[in-house]
Image (cartoon, rainbow, N blue to C red):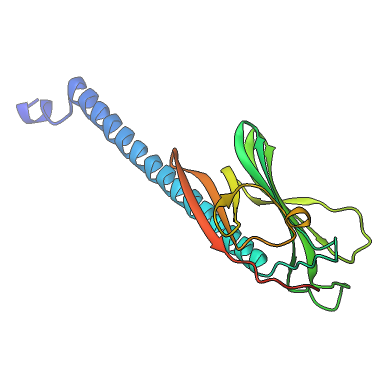
Length: 205
């Protein structure tokens, strides 16, 4: 047998080195692939949180702007309470406002009482929204999640000289001149704060 025939194969050492190199390369590719997937999921989650945040603040801005109030009608109200919810300073907001009707399939006046509160679900804070038609006889009203992964919800009212954290139109006899809503969320392990300003346009039914 010639020398060429004896040297045409791979030695055991060469096979082991190739296997080790292949394992290292596979591990690197595996880590990179799943790292990209995790980054994509975090980005998608962040975009969803920002979308919820923007939609929530815009909804509250429009509802505050369209608030209904009349001293002689006790059903029309604007109430802000400063509370400590789950160890965090949080506000509750209840107001009577205008909303678009769903159509002719249901009898709706377009005037509703809306309440926002912080609740806890699966050890996470969520902002709930409760809506009831002012003239509805249905006493069963459910609170639905409006925004998840929220850290704090703070509502402040401007009385013309200073910002206060509590307001009751039945006691104050009027609406605040301005309303500031601040929402805190967790963004990539850090607390991010966003605020919105709105001014009520006084109107009755």
